Image (tube, rainbow, N blue to C red; front, top):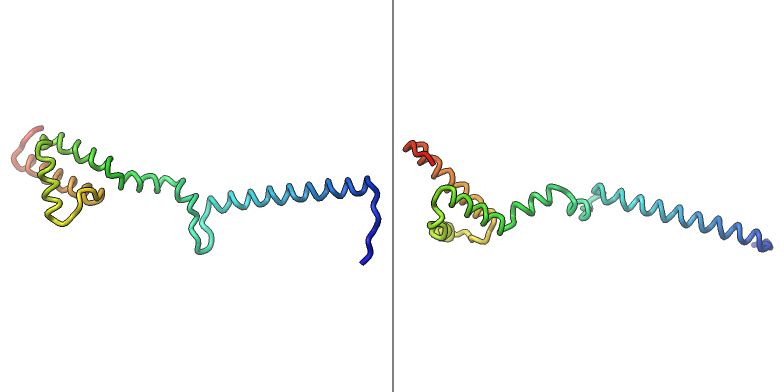
Length: 127
């Protein structure tokens, strides 16, 4: 192995060249990281892309218990059953479901709303 002697100017040029190469590699690494965040790769899930997706936000809203309870109260108010709100929640508990479970409460709201709508249609009741 033979070493070549370099003067100061040659060493400076070599250092600048090495510096540019490291910057290029850093940019390539950043581009690769951004590409990974846009797509899933292999058998791994890209958590960043999932958290940013609209589907995740919609799912999060669907299971938000405060929002579901608000919708339940709005539906009960619309059907003039707000004073029976707790009574119907107790029925849900007696069926073995928790009232703090967003999915069960949402389904229960749909059932009540459909029953009330069917009764109004059957007896020709206007709001």
